[in-house]
Amino acid sequence: MVSLLSVAGCGLHQSALNPAGRDATSISTLFWVMLAGAVVLWLLVNGAFFYMSRVRPGQFDQRYARHILIGGGIVLPVVVLTTLLVWGLSILPDPRRPGDGLVVRITGEQWWWRVEYWPEGAEDPILSANELRLPAGERTEIRLTSARVIHSFWVPALGGKMDMFPGRETMISLAPEKPGSYRGQCAEFCGASHAWMAFSAVVMDPGAFDTWLAAEAADATPPQDEAAVRGADLFLSEGCGACHTIRGTDAAGLVGPDLTHVGSRQTIGAGRLPATLDDIRLWLDHTEALKPEVKMPTYDLSPTELDDLAQYLEGLK
Ligand code: CUA
Image (cartoon, rainbow, N blue to C red; front, side):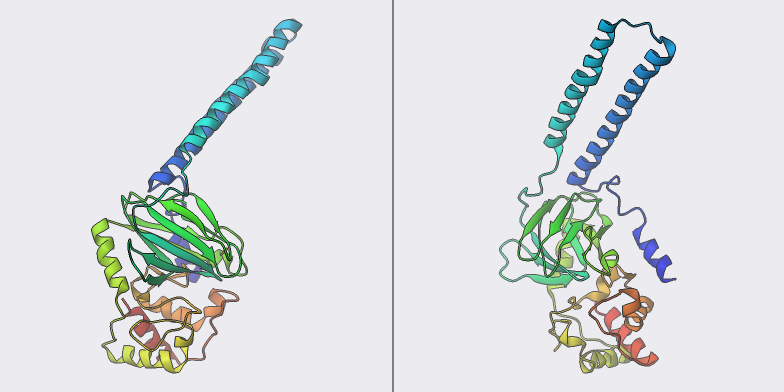
């Protein structure tokens, strides 16, 4: 069940050959042209080889053979490869291209993503985690760093990949065009749960994005139904707030992901499970099994407590 769900989460949304933005389109074009060029060259070289060795064996004088060798073995590859190199460099996306205003800072943690939105002119960031939302049709600067070890940021459907280093800032600018949800994945081995360090990149129409960002900046809505209220109390009494922040409550920890609007995200545990009530409960009950060596301890909670806590977190829209 668990593995089926996580596989269902990937689908075709993590492919560099299914581009949804300007930079990814350049990379995909580059791939197809290089592939086509390689196929043509392979056919030419093998065709010539076949012709000379099988169809007309021993019928070429030395001078003619030397011309073929120099032409086909030196001149042709130099011309073709130089052309491909120059053209390839010209269309390769520049990761440092300036954005249109919005800056998103992402810190790689073990094994999740700390995300800060800095709209143009903002003095304080809007804090989030494990999901990257971007406006379609605009270029956004993604500024990357890491807390402890090297990670790598990669959303294949949106653009190239960029490493994240502790104590250093790297950058990749992305210009998504097609609204939708795409999968991002850490692309540098970073420890036991490297494979479980994923996220969704959600591309939205600019209007919808602004509405979403305003909602993301707001404090959490206090829970209404009884189970969720019990869950909220439990969250604080069990000490979850020492590691997690839920704005508008006493929970202000910075060790783990910000959970202020965790129920509105597509996944939990950095792409580990869908953010449904059942999966949040599963996560709380089997955190270590789902994400080996995760910092979050497994709490000994009763079934009712798990229900209440899951109810509370799922309701944090
Ligand atoms: Cu982070 Cu691999």
